[in-house]
Image 1 (cartoon, rainbow, N blue to C red):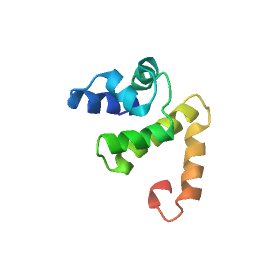
Image 2: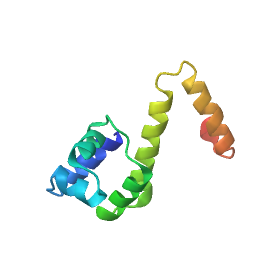
Image 3: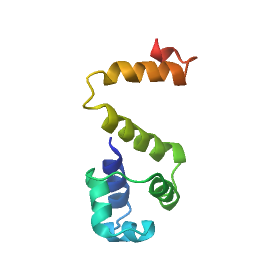
Length: 99
């Protein structure tokens, strides 16, 4: 699930309108709409505000947001997969997933 899909789902489950979430984030509704649709990236501060607003564990929403950042960076790269594997080995050398 991508970040925009997740926050849309959270918003709808809470019975809220986009304008209400936008007001909480102190951004305009069209910008929030673009974040939900995936045409604009949320800032880290917005993710943290949403974590508090929806009373989530930080890891839950931050992990999805970070995954989106990685996907957007690597999706058009010819060597994206091999680059990701190298980065994973360097970042988490004791994790056997990267071998």
